[in-house]
Image (cartoon, rainbow, N blue to C red; front, top):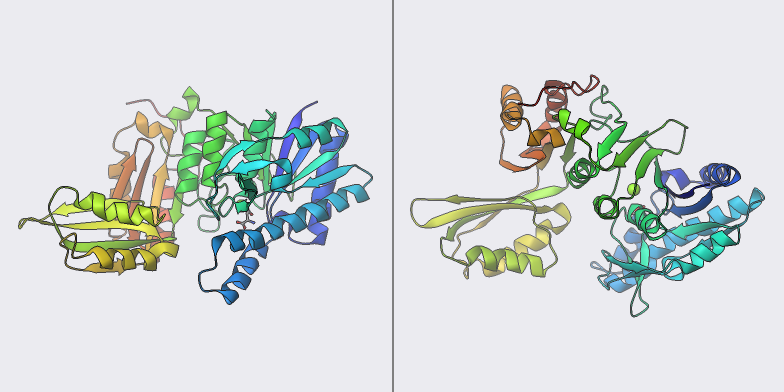
Length: 412
Ligand code: ASP
Ligand code: MG
């Protein structure tokens, strides 16, 4: 008998019939003798609908109130799923984030989990119940309702699995697992049987939407085995696990893209110490996360600085920079929100050379201009014009031979 956490995303609980389908799957696991904790998202589109409602009341809604509104989405799902499971003759009980108690900090709309006191859930399991936990929400030390950022139900599931030392955290979604690239763009994309935490972390943060980035980080820190699979069939999905030596033999495991960032360039910034600290300090104070940064030194003692931020923070970042232009001795701000970041990821890059060169060459052959580059041990990212995204992903997938079963190469 195992302890299993199952998480069902918005599309999997998108309507009454789908919730009944989830209830059937959950009860199958229970009937097999397992203890089951189910984490659910809001019904598909519901979180966006709630945000839309809030924005009708205020252009920039107060974030405490926004969390009060957003948390209702998941609360409806847990109640409905609980009823559906009871309807099948099993015992189930729903828990909100605060009932569990999933304790977070007080940063509304992107709170971090501080601790989980899962006693009530343990108690429910001990009494033979299936525990249904609302994803995406928690409670601050001051008893305020908080939410964990978009896609946060994945994090709830992984954190519950860690807190209860579950045998596996199954993330049920509308795709069969983690693919070498978005199958909507590359029809030959292949489902991966296994992927390491580090690769999954890069892919998630670089734009692959299948798992929320912070949930992967959490899984990695607590070594939670995560199984990403479809709620619409019984196919085995992708296991996200600790890296082993065979994984290093594959140079590139996957390709991700992200169209959700914008580029900001500040021209003729004074080339003096602490300028970057001032600039990025102001941006950080506004809770805006900067991704890539490129600085060009010019001949005449000034520099151009370009960086990328989430599109949702694009306007606000420009406002912030405009205010401090004089202070940092800069000329002007130029924005570009028609960009995309395309990335290749693989732990094998640590031991193989020439990977970045091959990526640049492949893009060059298609006359795709590279605007920015960044690398880490296991990824190379290029910012390009957004209109070339699909083409870039396709040619890279082809160039690195991802459609075929992974070729095992000798280490160079
Ligand atoms: N309902 C939330 C969202 O749409 C959380 C989740 O689904 O994971 O972002
Ligand atoms: Mg999701």
